[in-house]
Length: 168
Image 1: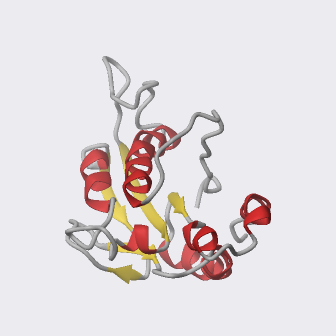
Image 2: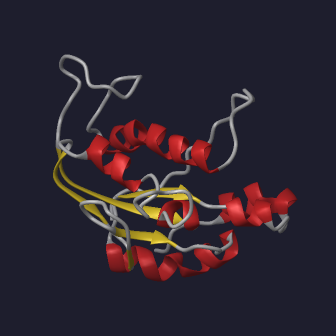
């Protein structure tokens, strides 16, 4: 499978917007980060400049999360951030493939692991099955919203997520 999936965290302390719109925007901002992790883009702002753009042979992205990833809440296409993410990644790989056991929305490849209402524990307990089945080389992790919404072990959320490791 290559390298382990990485979690990208903003630690600047700068206040940021909250809610579903902010979550969608943060996922789209991660598109250049995904490409940088595969070696496809090496520009600091995520936009390819002269001599910084290459294609990777296969970019298999697993969008992993809850209803924001699924797209069934606050999305006119029932796809959430996935169509815009697809548009930003398309052209940077010989083969672009969204992977996962779920299919929904209006996006060129509707595969994902978005599970509305699921908490961090529920999602992490299935990762050992989903990862080998889908064989992603990038996992976009957007989880924890339901934990916060339900005030579920909020104080230990970063530690629980950080302790999660991919199988193998």
